[in-house]
Amino acid sequence: MPRTDFIETEGTVTRMRGHGFYTVVLENGHEVLARMSGRMTRNHIRVIQDDRVRMEISPADWTQGRIVYRYK
Image (cartoon, rainbow, N blue to C red):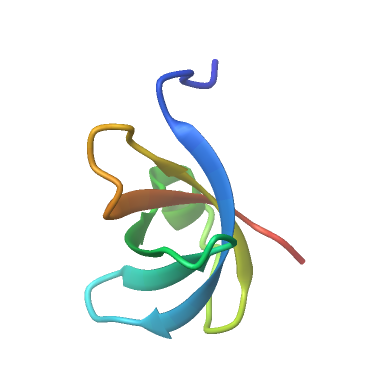
């Protein structure tokens, strides 16, 4: 079951950082540091610069998130 305590938003990957971190710009212009979710890593889904992604952000910390889906 999906967790309901996260905020789901969409954004664009603008920069690939080292060790699996990405800089994602949300639709409202806010920058977030994001990691891939475990399911995406396990299924070998690649994310590169300029990909549109859906991500989950914790309401407590708006500076970090988790990428859960890559749009085709």
